[in-house]
Length: 255
Ligand SMILES: Nc1nc2c(c(=O)[nH]1)N[C@H]1C(S)=C(S)[C@@H](COP(=O)(O)O)O[C@H]1N2
Ligand SMILES: [Mo]
Image (cartoon, rainbow, N blue to C red; front, side, top):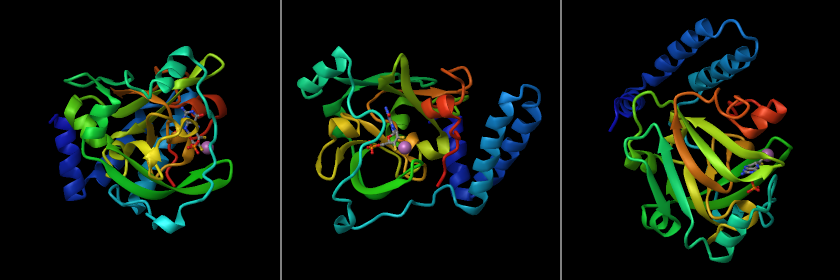
């Protein structure tokens, strides 16, 4: 267990993480004067810390009963992945597919879908809210992200978890990032089942993120790699996610 993880856990247990988050937000605002595009990310962190003042970092998103599941769960954004690699993996039932875990971790690893499915899993029925104005309730089963991060042992200095995806819009791959509090939240899972069936292609097969206290665009589909990172400003467009880069969506998408 790394120092940061220990501190995070101690903070969650003692309830002092709120104070730590606000102190952090304050520091960032002082440090991030200057370039105008950095004001937006410090505003994001301010919003995150303000929301955490009124919502405990461990608070659970509402869960629903099986009969409340939406009969039609809309698929949005990419519904298919048009690369030869992906078509081949899909055709073979993802038998040779691997999830890589790297970046600031002591034990980089690559896991098959079968290996992921042998780990303890969690099932939850939650509501997905897309900024485009629709919601749907679905049942998700998958591997808790925190469990994988504990296996890989994230190192001190890691502050975000980055998700790389198999699909692209033109030449731009989809990606997303979340902070460590969302990453270790008990309802944050890498789902490989939906409504009791293997995750369908249009919903992100073979593996997609469920980060239940955040808006739809944070829920990366077709995840192929996870990295622990110190900062997302050096990655792609620098805003921490595909839609953040492209359309100015907020990095902090807390519901
Ligand atoms: N890789 C990838 N992940 C993605 C997207 C995408 O286009 N590609 N769209 C996002 C958006 S905006 C939403 S609302 C949800 C939609 O998930 P669904 O297709 O399972 O409804 O996926 C999110 N994750
Ligand atoms: Mo969305």
